[in-house]
Length: 122
Image (cartoon, rainbow, N blue to C red; front, side, top):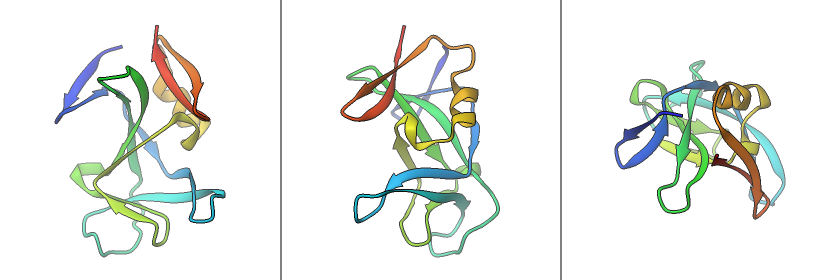
């Protein structure tokens, strides 16, 4: 697996489209939220999906998914849930199709740590 520097982060080269994320809401229930790219933090949803890349933690070596907006845009998660430039999530938060595309032809083993699915490079 080839890794690139993205600011101070270490990310994979392959990008996939992310349209929904499974996250916990305020009450603790796991719900599916829409994700899109926006260019103004106060705008409504757009039809432009977000992008996901593999992200490797320097200290622990665990691998997750970095969600960013296309063309350096913000990401908007849910109706009024979250607006920021990027978010790091574990593997169970994205769809199986997107996860398969990210992990294709890599030597990453999926393990469960603290009820979260993360990757470890073999």
